[in-house]
Length: 326
Image (cartoon, rainbow, N blue to C red; front, side, top):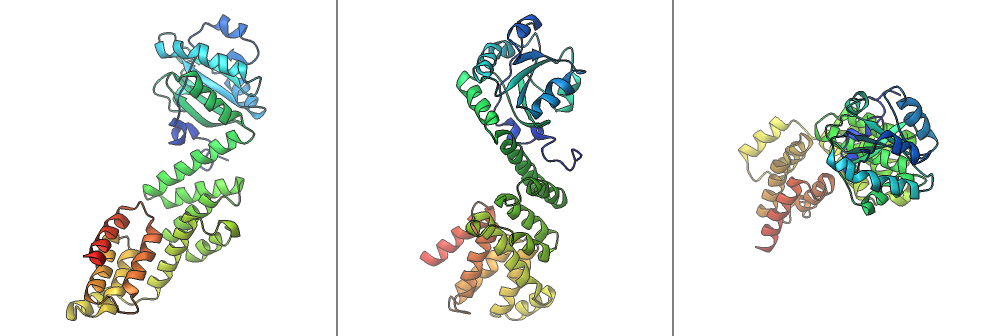
C-alpha cells in the first residue's frame, strides 16, 4: 500500500501526531550505547533495520535531536528513564539531524526536539518539545498498550480524512475512511465519514449500503444519525421539481409555502444552509400550523444532518428560539 492509499504512512503530518511532543537525544553516542539494548543511535542507512523492522516487534520511538538543541538536552534523561522503566515495551532510537537530515525531512519535521513513534513499520504518533516526565510516560503508555499503536494510527487517519473532507477533497477522504475500515470493519466514525463522503459524491445507494454496516448497538451514535439524516434529505431533494420553477412560483406568490419548503430542500442540497433555514423559518413565522408544523420538523432534521457545532445550525437555532419565544 502506498503512502497515498495508506492513512498510517504519514501519521506525523496529521493533527493527531502533534497532540503531544517530547524529544531527547543530545547525549553523545557513548552514553546511548551504555544505556543498553533499549536505547541506541542510528543513521540514515540503519533506519530501516533499527526502526522499521524493530517496530514490527514492539513500538520504537525515534528521537530527532541535534547537539546545539537545549530542549533536546532537557529531554534526554527524561525519555531515557521512562523508556528503561517501560521494561522493553518500547525502544528508543536517536537520530542526530545534523549528521542525518534525510529521514527528518521526509517526515516533515521542522523543529526539534521531535519524537515519532513507529509501530508495525509505520509512524503512528508523535510529539514535539521537552515534555515533563509525567507526559512522556503517558505518551509511552498509550503507544505501548496492546492496541496503542493501531489506535493512534487510526486516529491520525481519521483526522487526515476530516481535513481532506473539510478541504472539499471527498475522494481522498473516502479513500482514507476505506483504509481505516479495512483495518476495523465496524469502526463507527469511519463508516459515518465514508457515508458522508459518498453522499457528497452523489452515490446515495452506496452511502446507504455503508450505513447498513453500522452495528445495531451503534445506530444511535450522533455521527451515524447525522449521516442517515443527510441521506434522507438527499432522497427528498431528488424527488423535488425544478428549483428555477419553484423560485418563480414563490416570487408570484410569497404565501406558496410548499414552493418555499421545496426550495429550502434544494438550497440545503447545494450547501446553502443559511438560506435553506431562513426559508423554513419564514414558513413558521407565516403559519406554524402549515403541514402539521412541517417547517419546524424539517429544520430540526437539518440540524441533525448538519451537526450541533455547524455554524448554520447555531445561527438557525438562535433564530428559531427567537421566533418561538418572542
